[in-house]
Amino acid sequence: MTAGKALKILHLTAQKPFATGSGTYLLNLIGALSGKGCEQAVIYGIDAGEQLPEDAARRFSEARLQSYPVLYSSPELPFHVLGMSDVMPYPATRYRDLNENMLKAFEAAFGQAIKTAVKAFQPDLIFCQHLFLLSALVRRLCPDRPVFAFCHETGLIQSEINPHLFARIKDDLARLEGIFALQPLQQKKILSRIPIPASRCIVTGTSCNLSVFQKENSTAKRTLAEGSGDLSNGFDKEPAGKPNCNIASGKRAGNSRSLNVHQQDNAVNASAQLSCSSAELVRPCRLIYAGKLSRLKGVDLLLRACRLLNPEKFSLTLIGDSSDEEEQRLIEQLCASLTLPLQRFPRQDNAALPAFYAQADLFILPTLREGLAISILEALACGLPCLMSDLPGAPDGLLAHLLYKPEEKLPQALRFVPFPEDVSADPEALLQPAQASEEAAAAFVQNLAESIQDFAPACVSRELAFPDMSPCLASSLADRILAACEKLLA
Image (cartoon, rainbow, N blue to C red; front, side):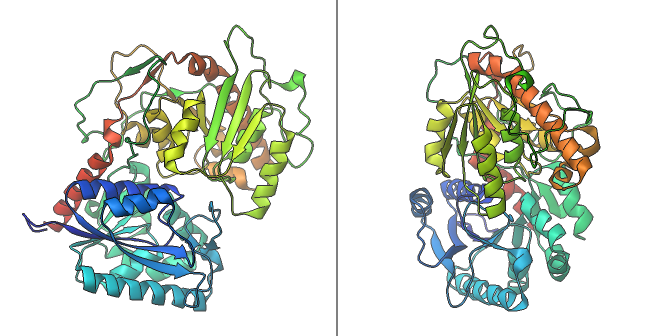
């Protein structure tokens, strides 16, 4: 990288640069790098005839991006956008459904865009979202330019689902200048699968757009930590012990009453519901979930847990879409079985979400797998307490982005719900149809319902400590990434 010269960065993503966590990550990073004087271009996938939504188009314009869209649903790519998740918030093609002709078409279309963009833009650095096919392709096509890949958890998932595809790209991925991981456990997974030196796989974390996600109403009581904003702590180090965070109450043993969703658990009666006295809740607690409506995100488990809550004391707002018809049917059935008040909305642009969060008391993310949950950081930044499943690596990864006062006496606004012991190391086992998996799922549903109930009074009263979010600034993430690039290219 040349001193005194504006850095030129080419971004790539094989899917739409919006509507997903990685899309949000990309938009935040582009905005932050623009603020640092970088010149940028982007190659992205989108269906023919589709326009960028207003928020993404505005941010592209503000960054003065040179854009090179690759059109799916076109003669060159006659299928929907490839989705890094098997369940996307829009119509998408699964990697597992690619045949050889589709794969060749993908490589030809994106290969042409890469050659065109590199020749016209002459980038100093190439940043590719997702550690999968496109990262390997750009590495092969641009052997003389520094190429870095950003690992979102879905890249690792696709390598597990599609070992035949991963075998084709593994060596190319090993030749990347660097791989950026979201958190230490993910870094370990990458190094166990890709033969790249450990020094070239760096934990850089994530960010959220704090200019959008912020608390407008200052009347709610909260405590903001004071901190220097030093970002060196935690991102590349794994804590020696359990982080200083609240693990929500709940049984870890899998002996709770079974709630077999495939049978009759849509008839939960008042006697089976958890008790919650009016003395504990001064008013009903408003729960909210925003994200993809999928089983991997645990939405079905959240809905089952809501059936155990007192419908006079809780309500739920559900925001999001699903591209999987079978999972959509399951979610519709569970929604229809709820007795508590339910509001549903389609996927919302980021700019719209804070208004929803301002009307909620508790954000819930019962996901079974996650890289690093940007949605949790966004909700916290809005002053909304959060409850998340206790995924392996999740507390460490998230708490590296949050600064709390050491002397703070109030309980923290982020809690984690434990999984039963037999699936705590592999929560995705809850997706399996086996009886043991259903029993573990029932136990987690019980844990989740109890955790919601226990956390609700503090969420309604806002007698909680909220963190300083400065490590989540997109500019801080950009600093970490550029510093890592400079170190790796020295």
